[in-house]
Amino acid sequence: MRYVLALILMFTFYATSAVAGQESDGMAASSADMSDSDKAAHQAHEAYVEAINSNDLDRLMDMLTDDVVYMAPNDKPVVGKDAVRPWVEGYFAAYKTHWDKPVQDFVVNGDWAWERYSYTSTDTPVEGGEPITGSGWGLLIYHHDADGKWRVARDAWGSDQPAQ
Image 1 (cartoon, one colour):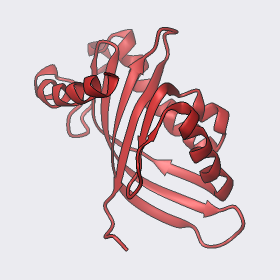
Image 2 (spheres, one colour):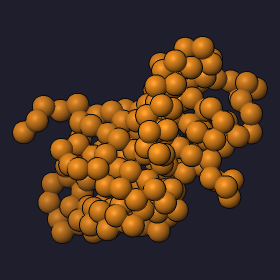
Image 3 (cartoon, helix red, strand yellow):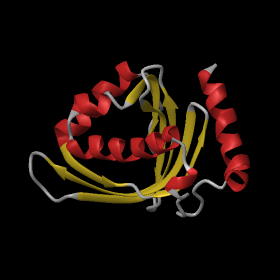
Image 4 (cartoon, helix red, strand yellow):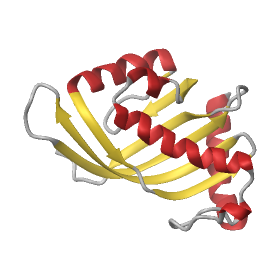
């Protein structure tokens, strides 16, 4: 049911982003136009990127809803925090990672927020070797949980590099 709701909300994102006057094409709404909840949702973006770049598994897991879904390129969706944890743990064990995720669009609607971003990533093998760089696009869906914290409910991303 939450998955269907997420799809409906993604559709609503495109319908409301033009009307809502939120961020569009990288243009930020002024802080005077945002409620405290909207500001907190926007701050969740920074907290999520910082958690990824900390390479701290527990810090990143705290940013995710229990039913989070990761949709990585060329891979099956990873569903639920219990499934995402070992996936991220393996990633952090193999690489020291750094991601830049500039926001392209950001819309807050009640307890949900949608973010379209671009990214550049650098994954440096922990065992040594040349860093692996990448770039692409992504779509994040945040949920404002009962404890008052905005968390990532869905993160889908894809490479803008040719398939190898």
